[in-house]
Length: 291
Length: 291
Image: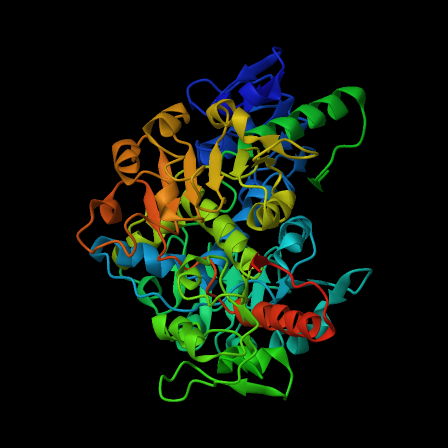
């Protein structure tokens, strides 16, 4: 039995699936291929204990830590890497342009109608260093191609079109914009600390569309004003209303909305359909985290 | 004698030019090639009366109406069409993303720290109709290429890759985003009126980076809320602080900053250098408005 939440099932385009949104009263026990609901919370993962025939758990997120704790022995776990690339990369461009062109300041000045015309930064002619050469980093690089700016992709190791993370200290010194688009792991936790930010030029912009814990929040607060920040993710998250980061100068914060857009459903629908077809035909699944 | 304002002269890269920023006490009478100052206002144009040897007036704007009234008989007038394309097209993308992804609402919610997470529109999968297939329209289409959206360029007449303005009524009905990027002339003044907006789908977005008078302000106010608007130009302009457009729902306004960015000086510098070289060698000038 293939079990999917309703909003995804509609985009998968098969009529042989069972819709289940994590109602604890009716866990579908004969589930073999399972997509936990986006909205159901912890219970959607705990329910896997009650699915003795479960073979595949397909997430609709790139992150998978929350599922690992509940994954039964022998079940294959796949994430949704790639599904959020378009939406997240697009937000990164939106945040870069909003901050450089001061669209955030203009929006805030609108109620009083008194925004002062001035000459601001363009993205054209700037050097953008994208830390992370995976799906989001590459999706971002494709989107920046038309903007007459220079894009430097930075991966773990150097390869064609990608610089090595070992060069990052030097690359950051010459960047106008640095975008963080790496997964959170032991090598990236706290990667952007006070020393990292100190290397950045006056007036340059740091964008984080990855995970909050990659950037040290106290370091942001110390540098806000000299540097500019655009953050879709924060540490802590959600950011409490009284947190000073909400009101730090030159900082724009979006509430972790990188992936959750209208682009999500068609893309997760295509991924789940492909994965179900692979599973049925015995082909290797994509995005396998645990097998 | 070649006479340029200081900030442009620095980017032209020649040492045989005279810097003049429109100080009325010292009009350079032997001027033959002249770029009026960006900041000096009316006097910079009136000064042409005091330049009996003037051959070329090279503007740094695409608009040229303000210079025509003061242009002496026999002087060639060139505009700066193309110089603002990168910056203006870039702002159009920024405004589209800001409005679809609600970066404007997020910026306004930041001081209270209480923005509510929700699923908003992505640009991916959308159909963007760009009214105007000139420099800005094409620069915008290039920038949108990586965004997984469909771009429809609309020109005066149909040609390869460009639909005819005669089809606009139908194209607007199927658009998610309509961007106005045409010059203001008799055929475009009031082009976007109540009937035009009535054709647009609920929730779709109109962006104006051209001239305020192309879009009817009362029609915007009547449709704001059903439609979304992102306006770099308005009618009237500047918009008085008490004007209701500043506070209309779903409207973001930037204060005519499409062209005035850091991208401007390197590009006007390159254009002026090329024009001076053409003038010196007797080659045809670019962007000739009056000759």
